[in-house]
Image 1 (cartoon, rainbow, N blue to C red):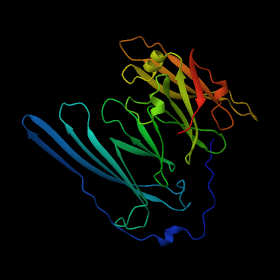
Image 2: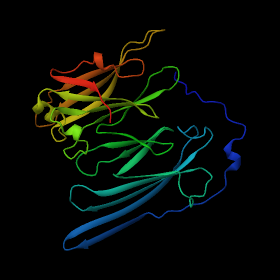
Image 3: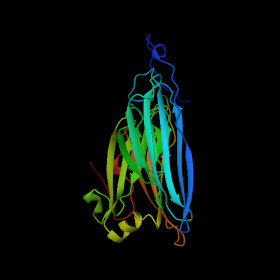
Image 4: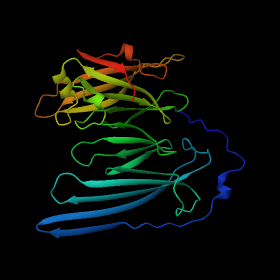
Length: 282
């Protein structure tokens, strides 16, 4: 059984200072047709309130999150022109006041991961990817081109860790990731900071190009755990699986990176032939 450790509440609980308020934001849809082209404009606004113990905020504070999604697309066309805006206030503050922070990005949606992170869904065309932000202050942590992997490094107290894989697109702004041997960057993070980044490369540039291809290859992250023995730390490893898309045969290729003492054990990673993994920093 996993328990979440929570400090005792302070005597001056902020509940006593919260003031009633009311806020309304319009949602709308607009359909137009001109010269045979049909266009749909949509704005959706939603609110949610977090629990207490938001990372980076006072323990007894709750946040109000307002999510505004604006999208425009042409009927029967591929892709959507969409933006998401996230605004946050302490519960009890009039929402007419300036928010604690504002996150704005091109994308279709986003979701809160408990009281720790906000994950923005960025794929507006054929490639799905996500941006990860700290819930307490809106700071951007990292991007991932596979669904975010989450697990706890402790069986007694929930101590969450997050793993993502950034696969550089052709128009990446980081010139280092344009190097033809690069496959991608594996990120290992807590709710507060990026703890480790590791660069995956391949001696064969054609193989590297295939493994980072969005059209030809699917990538997956998963956690592999060994048998649990009382009094001993269980073995854990991050599995990165590459499979080719139809009509090619799957031809799976995988890498296993152990997690030891709350870090990626790059020295003992099990990698495909000609593939390497090294520590890397932005």
